[in-house]
Image (cartoon, one colour):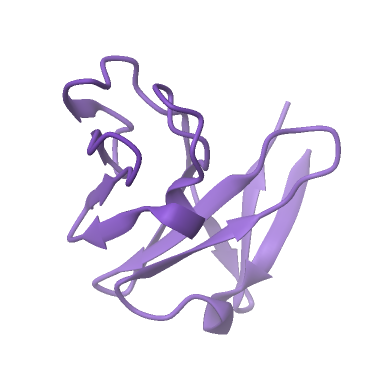
Length: 103
């Protein structure tokens, strides 16, 4: 099932926003170098919101709670205390709308 998240214009370059989804944890939508990425928004270590409380530098988002870092392209945890990756979703961009496919 394809789920619409937001308009491309809602996400400024080099920034991220949180999108709430009914019955699920929120996701974060990122825009880096004109490309869009989507991950789960909740840090796998401290349960903080990455979009609301984190910092984006290039393709790396840092959780403000304990400085854990994730690659938004792959979800890989890049440093301790985070060792569990975040889930990523391929961003579908059509007619200036960003969507993801959910099961």
